[in-house]
Length: 146
Image 1 (cartoon, rainbow, N blue to C red):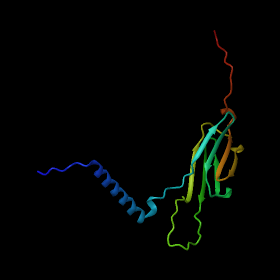
Image 2 (image 1 turned 90 degrees about the vertical axis):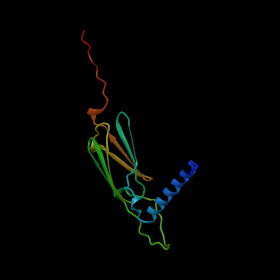
Image 3 (image 1 turned 30 degrees about the vertical axis):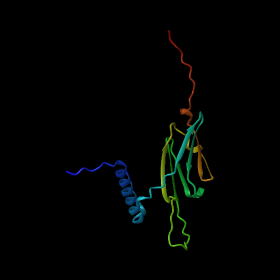
Image 4 (image 1 turned 45 degrees about the vertical axis):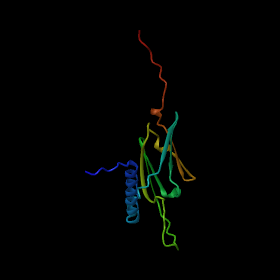
């Protein structure tokens, strides 16, 4: 029986090399596994009167963004087109995400969809959604019976 010295760092290095080789082979072949659907990041906060929603959608114009508001949620659609500039180089590498997106975001409270304001500046879509009157926090005096 032959004794073999255990070298834990050697095993980790071997595993790292194998993983690197796997990702290099995948990247050289088909790029589709790298691309994911473009989903814009969102941020929402509320105050006593409004729900505020912001989405990161750089590279679009306001005309390319479609917004549909329901009292309980909003649907935002758009598409970021890839520029078709002719390249004089032999290769191109891009980490930008292109394509259509569709995002549905629920509200914590009902909103008045006919009074929504939208503004697009510096790649950020900002929505101000007034809360529905019946959903605003109201103070009600309660009579306590003896």
